[in-house]
Image (tube, rainbow, N blue to C red; front, side, top):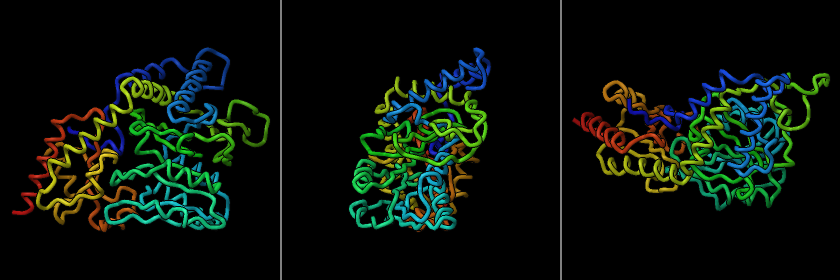
Length: 382
């Protein structure tokens, strides 16, 4: 199988990640739940991974790295726990439902008002007028770093500077960029960075988290066992325990730790350049082919390694099925949990076929996939 669905999850993991998970499953216990070696070993490994992540993303404190099961959980914790009732929040049309649905919940249940920066029919968002959207009562800007549908990348440094200038909370969804693009919370003035471990970071599913700037307060999302302060009636106040009422996924965190080591060894720039080259190769092979419509600005090499398209008027799921059944090529089709972007692109009914490229893909796989799409388009035109 040729796997080109890396924006959903990276199927192929570095061998060191698999080894780390396997080793953890046979050696470590429950962190903060005992004084024996296996529990202490888990606690040390988890803290070391917090420190790695803090350094990787430019978060000033390791104890402000909170582990979650994925970016969706992290975004719910951040959005529902940090935005006050009655606030005004600015977001964009690029957002995934993991941002949109928590925001709509706040709009419905907590009197929060929302404004969305509009995307044009190529999926681009104009940030030049961002300040004009700020009004009395605006408390936060919440946005993705890159669209999971078009790969369009937002200028976080520009947005962060405006947010800091006006005293706004800046919450970022890095689901599509963590492990592929450089992210520095201090330089970009990000207050809360939400990430998942199983995509660009090449770690296990069931891993992710938040990195929180010092001084930012988030209300507890859940309450329960923490291994410390057991006689207190409420969740302990200090981070990370405030937001981690649970047994952590230590086996997955061990894999995530190994994945970050792998990315550092290979080099973030090398990963980015290779994935971009593969996406460009695919686009150039299909550019100008009759019956193929692309979405997003595929000529922009600053985009994430995503190429979304449709073939003639075929439903996107039908095309994905042909690719899977006849060519053994795995892609993603449909609405991609990005309803506002599909409205902007006028693809609500048809959806889109998304090809997303990863570090372990090859030029030969890209060539095969492009030829398959050409054959589908030609057959449809006969």
